[in-house]
Amino acid sequence: MLHPRRRATLIAGLAIGLAAATVPALASPQQAQQAGSTVTAVVVVRPGVHLPLQVAGGHVLHVFSHVGSELVRAPMASLTALATDARVAGVTPDRSGRVAGYVGKNDKKDISPSGKGVFASEHLGGGAGNDKTGQGVNVAMLDTGLTDTEALNRASGRVTDGVDVSHLADKNGKAVTSGTFTDGYGHGTFLASLIAGGKVKGAGGHAIGVAPAARIVVVKVANDQGETTLSEVLAGMDWVASHAQGPDGQQMIQVLNVALAVDRPTAPSYGADPLTAAVEDVRAAGVLVVAAAGNDPTEVGDPGMDPQALTIGAADVSNGKPSVADFSGSGVVDGVQKPDVVASGVHVLGMVAPDSEIAQDNPQGWQDNGLFRGSGTSEATAIASGVAAAYFSDHPGATTAQAKAALRDSAGGDPRDPRAGAGLMQMVSNGAAKKASTNTGEAGFDAKSWKANSWQPGFDWVSLLASSWSASSWSASSWSASSWSASSWSASSWSASSWSASSWSASSWSASSWSGATWSASSWSDYEWGDG
Image (cartoon, rainbow, N blue to C red):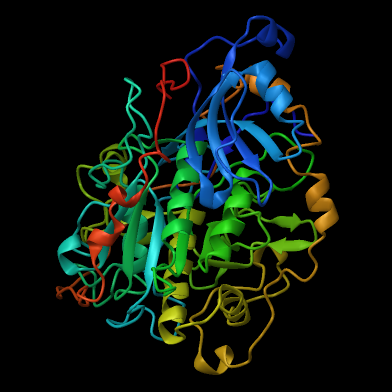
């Protein structure tokens, strides 16, 4: 069994390491309860339970009604009692995290800066990178925001600001649910360029993205220092679920890119938790969740471990013979082989703003052609989201199950490597899509095992809550392979392409459409919001 105090690590193409909080550890649950200590926690309710669910002696800070959870601050004793309530599926601390962009040269998982840079559209076949690929499809990107670049910008009509929940409340306790949407960190900008980036100078005749005609919906869940929390990630997923369909039932968001993953420190095996529950709620809203497998080769990260997600591992195609990257997460999740497929995730070429933190901290990532290079399962996830956008563009009205099956069926490569899932991702041909396959990869799912390992009951969550703010509990110093490395690349000049945004009003996606009552907040203190 994984110990509750085991290092917890949020990982993806850019890893998210759980930040150490700035408060002293509580020695035991008993001491915490005797002291009347309060804890900030996420509560997930069972289907059909109305939110908010009040907590004795505590406050409901935020309600995420479309993913069945809420954020509360309450005494430990009240949370202990709440966990036994028949309406409650589980309780977990609202952990802090930070998106981090580079694994140092001395880290054993560092990726060598040598090797050929790879464009996102390479090895995919079909119409990958073509001007009209992905047209009419909206990809929500749960990340650090997006800064305009030559490859992808708001003036093109291919970027819409959805919601910024990277500051659910400021230090004065005032609710904050919208912001600038720009990306001071750089991770979201880089991934967006891989999904939908167009033609730029220096790209040698290549579009930066797989689906240059798709639109990115910015769902900012981490601030400009890359800091985030479990509740902010849930808030972003809740927004996607609530805005997935228009008033007339039209599907407005087809794909959700989740290039974040967290190690599971609280149970002996995989099982349901707040993130996996949110994945299933988002998919129920008609959105295909494309999630990173994570960069720990010994396991599958959360929420990519959810059987209903299209989980993406990383392949190395930079040397001409595709293979699964050494760092790519994999495993069997209660009868389901993960990842579902792999996509290029080593030395991938994209764009970031020069003044972003990633670019400033990792100058070796710049190429001679002005592009930036990165590696990790988040890069692979972004490429897969581009392929998914192309599929939905070619097959409007397709269900998430149909899309998942078609993307798995179209994969190629060596099926003998279980870490590759169904194989190396390819664009879906019309012939493959017409097979009406049911190959979602979920047929072997063991629901009994999944339920038995859910985060409540089955582990000592009270101890976890009591120790969750210990600086020794969470280490942000070491996580999975993600690098930004240098290489030369020849290039030529060409112009950007875009498609008209006149059919869709960006104003309908403003944060003002959220109910103030839903997002009301009480006090947020330095106690619960460590500097990370």
